[in-house]
Image 1 (tube, rainbow, N blue to C red):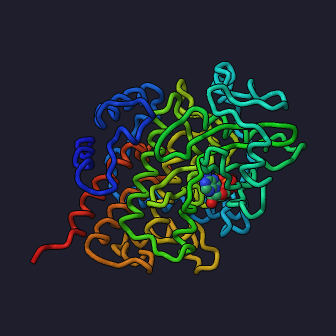
Image 2 (cartoon, helix red, strand yellow; image 1 turned 90 degrees about the vertical axis):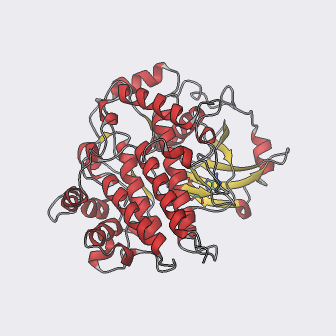
Length: 435
Ligand SMILES: Nc1ncnc2c1ncn2[C@@H]1O[C@H](COP(=O)(O)OP(=O)(O)OP(=O)(O)O)[C@@H](O)[C@H]1O
């Protein structure tokens, strides 16, 4: 299905939104206009980005995907993961020790030249990023009741997240960086998140309000997203099962968000940490992608940037692990893992299961190849014709996203188009028939 499907996408469903909602504020052209405009920009930016899945068959993908997990491959996700994270079930972000080459230096220097990197943040006195809302430390202390433990809503690798309410009533999430004077790397990560957040605006991305650095404090103030993260929902922590149709919508929201990052924003951004705990949900279960701590601006004059490997165990692109060459396709790989997670409800790595089931994506793709995809469906979900077909199609897409070689993975834009088509078919089949 091509962009024409976006018009069928704009029909009667209650939660449907115009494409203009999905792209950067200020864009007003139709969905297909926007898609083709940015498609051209993408193609010229990088030859890598212009390559699609090239119509390869599922079997070929599966063979290649299997080889990714072949025993003895020192770079296989299983090996890498155990090296990286002995307690994979926690899925904390891991910064791998391997340092890549410096072929991304052009990219880094261009970034510096643009003033995107460090220039406004070098001094330690209080300041705000130009153009963003101005915050003061007392204001944020008041909003978070002086970082009250009762208002703590999350703990990540680089800091603690608090809920807060500004004096005008706006609810915000305040990310407070870990205080580690000796860890320059951590400061770098935190600033990276700010610099990235400044450049982007999209309905399915957590909105950036501002930044504050004062004395030893580094604070990021973003939109508060009230309904927890996707991982919590898949685990049923809020007491309700996330219905299949909602999971499909979430997949589409995330695909839109990453498509925007890769193609619509001023300079393409690679998120590098797409995972279920970074997908936040609104009360209507719309998804917003968060956590730009690892994000990197994609090079527009090269096919990749060589960089230190970062990301989360279970979601990491094996080719990036092997070559340190980062492209948008690493996010596509992580998105493939996320698709499997949405269908199965399982974490990407389940250390307590039988060996054949431990790496969820591998297990699910094997079942899919034998025609048993339905056996992998989250047991909390109802099996019917609509889900049956949708699972098959979602796995077909997941298999392409999980292709060991990035050139065989689809673009995120293509993923979104395929998911629109899956949603259309799902709705048609799920509609009650009048007898
Ligand atoms: N804007 C927000 N609104 C509501 N809750 C949030 C927001 N940002 C983060 N959280 C909550 O805080 C948790 C931790 O977020 P954070 O981005 O710091 O770390 P993480 O992604 O879990 O881990 P890491 O940073 O190590 O990858 C999230 O999983 C989410 O539950």
